[in-house]
Length: 131
Image (tube, rainbow, N blue to C red; front, side):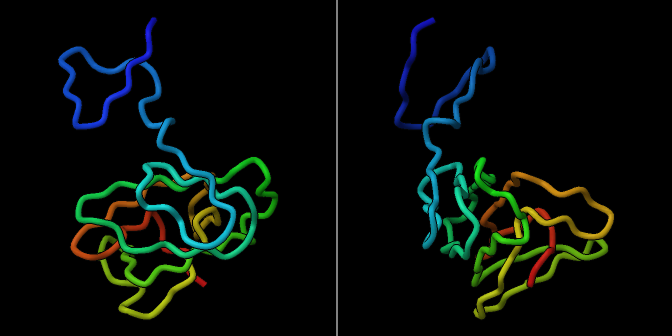
């Protein structure tokens, strides 16, 4: 099967075959997470910064193979939103909040990846584990 690269929106009436997200993955080794990519791979433990996105943007954060301790990864977020008992609320309102993306919260299993969506000026986080 041949490979094809697209630079704009793509519509399919028969579905997609293969991983269309992989080419936009970006390894992150500290500093700012590149929000121009669809997937950010956190390659080592440390503290990272998640800049604001654009409305409707989806970003997947995933742990690289070298992450041995989920509690060693912190993502600083200035505009983050999560939920508690189905009520959505900001976890950071202009102040920096450290989010632990791979640490389990009560009643959940630890994770190695998670989707974030930038909606109404906030990153909507998949869980509320903050430091």
